Length: 116
Image (cartoon, rainbow, N blue to C red):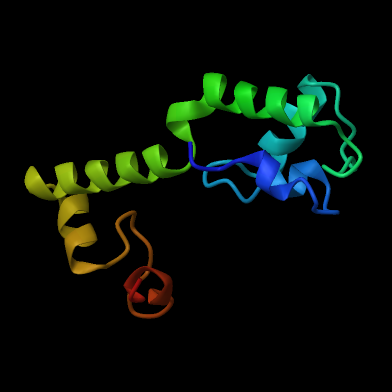
């Protein structure tokens, strides 16, 4: 995992907000992780020790290492490539840049069609 909590040690934002910057962690999961470690939701890295940040980093890597950040992005990309390779309807829609799950295309298909 390329995300390191120690790089945000001087930040004044709460730890759950910083955890939300990791691809694959949302608001609910980041709050749940902090609660399971006994951290207050409004605790910032400035108020915590390096030991707490290191243990939080280790916990993220051991429990969610393959489903966060770059490995998650890679897995999503490989799944889309697999769908395209087996010539499924969803793969065709992904290849053309259209909505793949039955959304309306006459209007409101901008999000799927935008260039990334």
